[in-house]
Structures are given as structure tokens and as C-alpha cells.
Length: 291
Image (cartoon, rainbow, N blue to C red; front, side, top):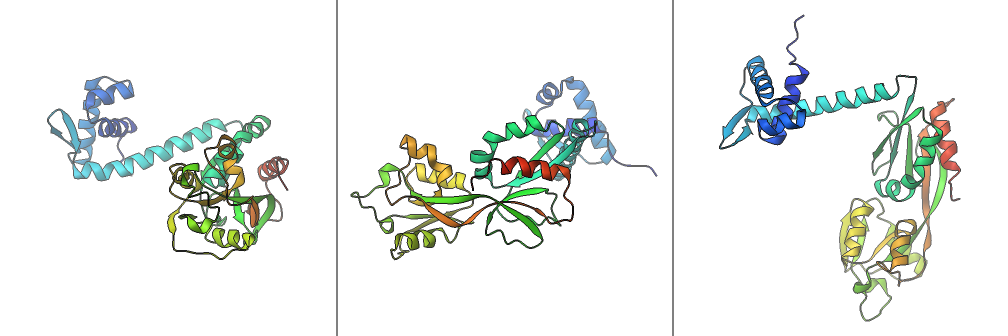
């Protein structure tokens, strides 16, 4: 059967020209001559029978067909490059460990430690992604997930990793007349922690007042930026703001940290026998457990 798939070279030239808006710049990016890139674009347009660019002054603007085609080309080339790299890195029998975690947890707690693991397990390639919801291991390509909750996910082995101590913080400039009642301030919220303020108020034995509710954020990185510029007060894991509290960028005038009912867990699909790569990572990360 005759295939209608264009050559990889022509597709790469198309993508580069689309991104650069000019054949000369695309040629420099691809380490090709301008005439070679032009020929590849012409060859591609002839192959599919549709114009992909039109010249507008000194730039090449994509046609509507070109815009649609790029979506497929970029995704396909990206997947092909990623899979090729994975095979190249593991041609000697290496393995890939697909790891999922919360973005801020990964950046502020796990990343500083992860070099130790990769040095000990040079045969393992880590594929790290982030997310905000528990993993469905039967549907997603994830081996291990660092998850937050009560550890009661169905068909999942959940090993406690660390407790979560949370604290109410704000920027120094936010303080009003030195009052330390959190109800006097705009409260910031985390989408994945809708219970955080209720938990805090109960620990402080005070009634919650919700007349000054502020924005809800998807992740702690965004919430921390909001705190820095003085948008309000937030309940955050203490381990995320230790340096900020030490430097004075944030303050905690509403009381000390409290221990949340929820914790961080090492989560993976329950099986009779776990692959060695899961055992290797689980054993390593448990050595850093703070329980």
C-alpha cells in the first residue's frame, strides 16, 4: 500500500518556518540553506495539494490549512522525538519509571533529593509529570504517584511518606493594626484543599467568617506569588514556606503550624508482585520519610 505521509525533513522545515515566520530564520535553526528549506516547503505543499503559507510583507503567514496541519505535525514530531530519545537512552536494557506528583511538592521537596536516586540507579530513566488529582493507574501511564489525602484510594497501595503541617501566612505589609485574627483579612483558597480554612479555624477554636473570601488557586506556586504581593492570607504547608518565613518575606502572625489530618503517600497500583523499578524508588524515598 502506498503511504501519503510526507518526509520528516519537509515536516521539520514546515514546523520551523511556521514558528520562525521566515525561511531564512528557519534555515538557521535547522542548519540548512535557505534554498533547501524553500524546496522542502514547496515539495510538501505539492505533496498535499494545499498552500500552507502566504507571504505578507516580509513574513510568511500560515494559511488556515497550515494552522490546522501544524497542530498534528507538532504533536507527532514531539511524540516521535520523545519515544526515540527514550529508546536511545535505554537500548542497553534500561527502564523508565513514570512518576507523578504535585508541582510544588516536586519542586520544593523532591527535586533537591532526586539526584541521589538517579546516581544510584543509572539504569532507570525518570519520566516525571505533575497533576492535582489522584491517579487512575488502570487508565494512566504512571508507575508511582506522590499523592495527598487520607490514603484510602481503591485498588491502590498507599504507603505514608510524611505528615503535612500547615500554617497561616501573609506578607508583612498585609497586617492591619497588628490584629492577629485571620477573620480580619482576605482569605486565599486552594482548589485541592477546600477544607483548609475550616481545619485551621477548628484548631484555633474560633468561628469562621467568610465575608472576605479571596481567589481560589489551582496550585501553591500561584498562591505563593499572590501571598508575596499581598493579596491576602493563606493556609500553606509549612515545608513550602520555611525559607520565606526565615527571610521575612512571609510572616505567620496567626499562630503556629498545625498537623493536618491528611498526609503525603507513595501510591502505586496494587499487584501481587511489584516491578523492581517500583521497589527501588519506594525503598529510596522511604529513606527520606519524615514520619
